[in-house]
Image (cartoon, rainbow, N blue to C red):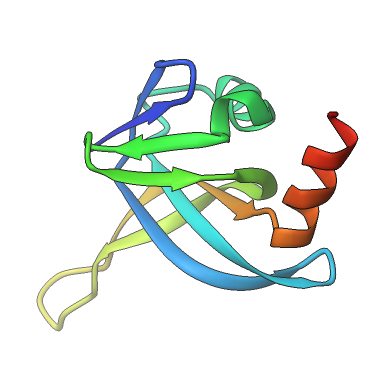
Amino acid sequence: MILTFADNSKLSVICVNASKRFFQNSNRNCLEIIVDPDDISFDSLRAIFSNPEKTVSMVLDGSNLYEDYTLRVKQALETAVLSEATPNSPEITADRFIVVMAQKTYIEKALTALLSK
């Protein structure tokens, strides 16, 4: 899957999951973006998702548009279970970068627009 940012830069991602979270005293729409650590460094990933001008508009595989996900909630290296353990084989795991981005609320967007005038 390819995630394209507002500046037309691209990032290869494993998957993008949508959810709701309580962050900065508001329930917000969030995106959990999972990236293979072999594709990009942790610092490069932080640089991408720390820039609101990049993440203000993101398109997944040319069809799914995500707007205003400009608040970084979390960035971490976590171990993901790729396949559960069975009686005949051990659990298979892999390290993954997890980035969670939150969307601004309506009031925050209105306030930003008002202050930019």
